[in-house]
Image (cartoon, rainbow, N blue to C red):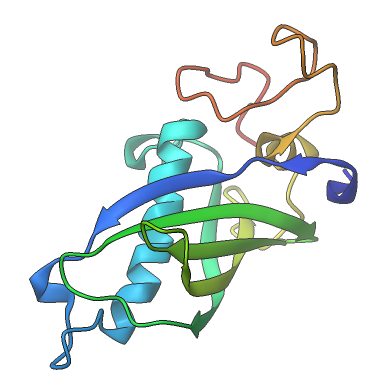
Length: 168
């Protein structure tokens, strides 16, 4: 599947910075950025794709974060609400390259992240290329966007289960 020909689905979550997440300068501590980005992605997958923690063990595959590259642009303070968005930029074999952005209420970028998530076949327990049917979950298909019932249109609809995706 060519991810360049598709429009990525963008996931969004909002978080409130807690006191226990602050460093002595009352900024979000460094390690918590990684937690916010990974927790955001898991919350979004549960909501939008149905991959809850309970469901993950039944899918026939595993994923793991191979790499996080975080850029710290502006400090994040205590009691601050932040919004994290993410989308799959591309698939390269076993790796999904995911771009994440953390913004404040005004939309100012506070931090960015590139997350590389590997696909592991559950039967062989070895890395494998992401199957086309799983890649398709993260992109909207080209179709008439004015017709919500058009064949092939994918949106991040939390009430929709995809009967076409089967464990591999």
